[in-house]
Image (cartoon, rainbow, N blue to C red):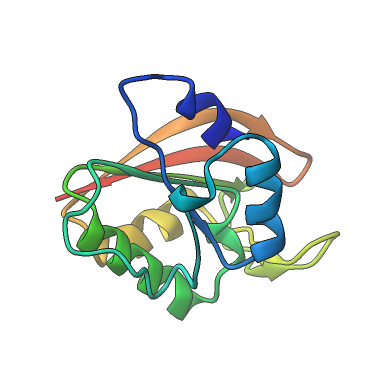
Length: 146
């Protein structure tokens, strides 16, 4: 959905990747050219170093293992020249609730936990509020850069 919105901005050349070929098919059905979509594991991105100006993830990073979070952030640092933006849920309590499974499995931890994960790879992490929320979590944007 976000790719469709961004693809409407003529100054942007938007590319996307997902581990699910099924979901990439859905993106194609929405009008995203298949040549701009890559089926891959986000912890092993097949793009050259500094290939993109920016990157974003929405609603995915919280589903990775801790090793996967680190791997994905390392890959973002490798393939992006500028900033990467990641929208994640943080626990409303600001406690590290860990891996929870209410209706899907994900990390529901504090903002500090997420910032520490990002700072293991990036020199600067900025946190912004997101409008997204549910009864367990609040949405935050993590903006990562060196």
